[in-house]
Image 1 (cartoon, rainbow, N blue to C red):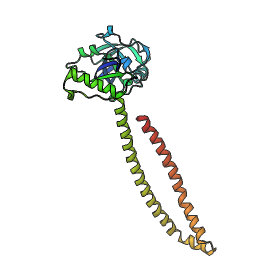
Image 2: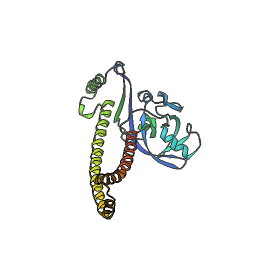
Image 3: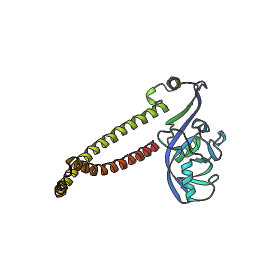
Image 4: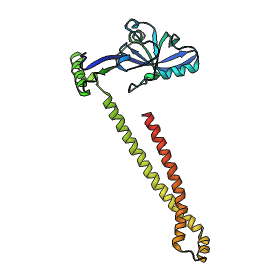
Length: 263
């Protein structure tokens, strides 16, 4: 690849396997990677070291930050140097990663187990690279890099129906569309609930007034004006509306904050 457009390339294999540690069995995504994976995804190391080219066929593994926290709840032993079973494969952990900021579409690096690519290929019946992540040169535009990749893939692979080139801009656009759809759905529900609440409040106010006819007649005996009486009923009706609205707004703010964290 040309450094003018691409800084590093990281092919990967991925599957979900049973991961065992001190009697704890966990289903985790297992990712076969090369040493460039550290650079491409800008990963940071908490303990230990990352793979090198000399580890390409060794039974080593690296665990993500969230998986490490889960394993620390099982045992207080150091995770670097610990032995794990991946199905029937005995692995030695050489690294614990810090929380990743990498944007990944179909799995979380923080919850995954990383293995040398060639080691994982030895245990797979039909190993197939289904994803290659590229770290683009920041001095080149996204469109230039995508065009460069498509032209070179066409040269090496020929048929361009076998692959698809995506970038983070497309992922972010898709997330933005999903957020807009969620906003429209929740907004429609909000309008519907507001109309239902208005009708229910109207019916409730009418019933309360009808049940208090004797009270209204008694107040009239003291020559209270109709405007004052109307204002009294209006205030009594608006107080529950005010508190219900305040609670609804607070719930909406908390829910929006929760959805933004998930996104």
